[in-house]
Amino acid sequence: MKITKTTRYDVAEHLRTPEEMAAYLEACMEEANGDAAFIAKALGDIARAKGMAQVARDAGLSRESLYKALSGERSPGFDTILKVVNALGLKLHAETDQS
Image (cartoon, rainbow, N blue to C red):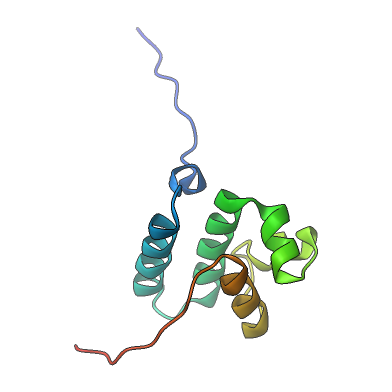
């Protein structure tokens, strides 16, 4: 019998362009259902794709605190979210709910 070797899927390896990163964040925001830690994890995926050290510098945070904030294990403060979104070169926007 042949053994199939598998590897863990890492979305950060597939986020190559700013457009892909924005689309991923948008999709995660739609699926989050109010779960702030889920959004933080999505931002962490994007930050890893861009380079965590650079994002931490651009956000004015230490790399360690950025990893903790975006781990998905807790909900970071909104000020941290805004710093990270800005450092990633993304924008948050609001629109009316059409449902």
